[in-house]
Structure formats: C-alpha cells, structure tokens
Length: 149
Length: 149
DNA sequence: AAACAAAACTTGATTCATTCCAAAAGAGTG
DNA sequence: CACTCTTTTGGAATGAATCAAGTTTTGTTT
Image 1 (cartoon, chains in turn cyan, orange, green, blue):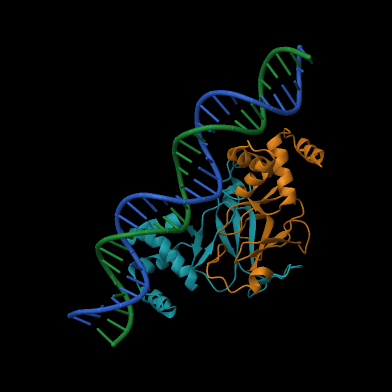
Image 2 (cartoon, rainbow over the protein chains, first blue to last red):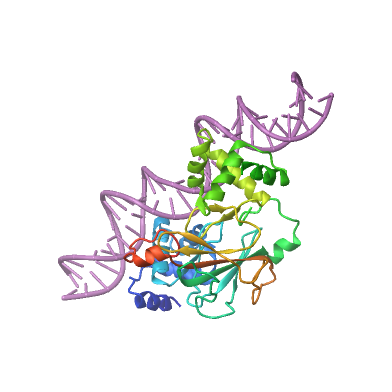
C-alpha cells in the first residue's frame, strides 16, 4: 500500500517524493538493512535515485520518527521501520544478523540505571550479543565481521 | 605503577612495549576516550608512536581482554580499562559524555531476552541515552553530535 | 652475554561509510 | 498556472579505520 506511506509522510509534514516512498517500502520488506542495501533496494524500483538522496531521506525519516536507526558496535548503520515500541535487538557476533526482541517492560526507558550520575535518561537501549542459529551450526568462524573483536 | 601494567601484559602473553604501557596508562587516567585522544595522550609521553601502533595496541589489548571497546551509535570507538564486571554506560545525546553504570544484576548476560530467536546470547549490553548535567543546564543544543538524531 | 625468530612498530597508501557543495528538479501553495 | 521552498542530483571531500612492506624490538635460546 503506497498510499499508506503517503499518509505517514504527510502526518509528519514531509513532502511525498518517489525516493521517500521507495525507502519506506524497502524498509517495510527488509528490516535491519544497511544503507548500501537500502540504495540497492530503492534502485530496483527507481534506478535513478542517487546515493545522497537515500542518505538524506533516511536522515529525514529518522528525524521525523518514521524509521529508527540502529548501529551495533563495529557495524555500519542499519534502519528499520518498526518504531514507537522501544523494542531491542539480538545481534550475531559472527554474521551480523539482527532479530527483534520485545521489551519485557514496555515503554521507554524500560530500565532504570542504578546510579545515573545526574543524567536525565530517556531511553535504555539493549543489545543482546550472541550467535545466531545458522552460525552456531557452522564451524566456528575465523573472522567475525562485527562486534567486539 | 607501570610495573602493574607489565604484569597485566605478561598475564595474557603479550610482550611488554612502550606503546602498550603508554596506552594502558592513558586509559587508566582517562576512561572512555576515543582513539585520537589515546594517540594524543600516548604521544605526551612517547612522541614517536605512530597512530597505526595505537590502533594495533588497542586491538591487541581488546582481544586479550585488558581493555574494552565501546561504541555508542553514531560515535567513534572509545576504550576503557575497566573490564570484567559487565557494567553499562550512560551517554549524553548532546555532548557525547559517558559515565559508568553498575550492572544491577551481576555477571553477563545480566538480562535475558524474552524471545532470543534461537540465538545463544552471551552478553546484554545496555546503553542509557539521556542528557548530562552540564548540557541540561545549558540552552537546548541545536546540533547533537551523537546518538539518534 | 650474543644471536635468533617471532612479534610489534613505522611509514605511507588505501578503503569505505558518510558528509559537503552548487546546480537542477520537484512538491505544495495561492 | 506561477512562485517559493524543499528535495534531489552529481561530483568531490572528509575522516575513521585498515592494509602492506620493510625495519626495529622483545623474549628466548645458546
């Protein structure tokens, strides 16, 4: 439903453009993709879209709260369109695969710090590090692409 | 105590070199610094150390478990010498300041995912996002350098 | 104490994600 | 339909991090 994306964009006072619709569609169909993949997916529909446009669109959509930017340590930025529910992620140290994990507590910040050092905390981001089922069955990888090395 | 660092290095079968001692000393005195700052701190003592050496040393020390690499979303890599206690961090969205937060639960993984999707999870990393006391008193910043924008 | 092999460091270049810039195109408004 | 502001294009630049070749240093052995 493309018109659905149009509604979303108008709701946050953003102009409706082909690149933006294509990015939203790409993220709906492929959660947790990096920027390069978004560019490739967008160009499958709109071959003339520049990489700069995708960067700009992702920034605009992130600012508007329509998409969420996630960036596990050691990896490039990834984006997802599931927003507003403060869910978390499991990340595979071996292949970088990401899966969603519902927040056990609910709304942000779902955790409270034992000592916040005077910071006013509005969000607790949780990243579960581990090994995905596929990598667990394979031989132990020799060159982990992401995460602490 | 430089000889203390020497003991640490030998304990993990790493050779004792000037660059490594300087990096360990820098991290002891300045927690949560990025690589450029480490380079500057090291060169205050050892002016001839190359940036590549610092990168190599940080990698070696991280692999050996003597230092921990942390990388909040949107920021460059930072390092700290407090290891082994699975503590977490509060990060200021405005200035990037980082403070330690003790883990309420204890050993890793301190949290368990509600649904781990078959991943075998060995660590739960928590980043508390907020505003530090300094930035809270200042005027609301117009250009946050780190974190979700 | 001298010599050797492996590990670590220096120098210089390169990669890659991301950003900056000026000009052209497109979206929404009256 | 014309106007204004926003967005996109195309190309170049930035900056953190990595790679590669050659030299120095460390820890060990004789």
